[in-house]
Length: 249
Image 1 (cartoon, rainbow, N blue to C red):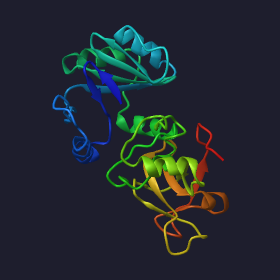
Image 2: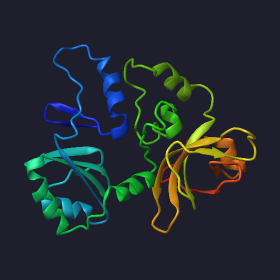
Image 3: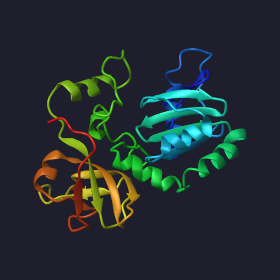
Image 4: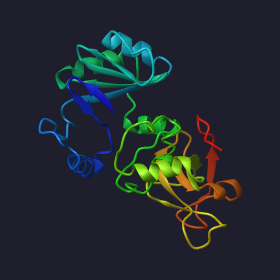
């Protein structure tokens, strides 16, 4: 989410845009505020890699100095989402020029590579197959700064606060690899929970070496003592991988 001129832009999966827009509209109390599909207002480009900052600097003249900050340029907005990752929100009339400038320093690889990079950074993307299945902590949002506990009232705050301050989460999001095709919403099974799913695939992306890397929400106890299997109790086994951040004990 970022501010661009007088607008606040929320980037999300296209298949949940209509339902999220409808839901946000229910809470608009002022006539001058509108929630609308702004997909065609700008062209979003992402740049990642060790030379990403240099490429963005060369194409647009500047980059934000710190992660999760932005800077306005003549062609649009540059958002730094990590040490080596940038999102560019560019005016459509300037997009071709920016693309050509970036191509002098970087190789076009397509959206699946960005999906894989985001996934391996442990950042979830909710889609229609997983919508409304998780509280924020289940997908580690409180660990990566994706939810604030200092804000005022908001819908669902009670269950979010209760998950944070009372008890212990039984389900968490983990990073894993599986040598099979996986997709968001696929069920996971383990031997300790017979007859019912122990988890769900949140996101999946083809891995460079074959198979799929996946973010999954699963029973924490199952990940400690059992092997997770995709789609069936005897399905392809998942191999857990370390997340780039530490989870609370």
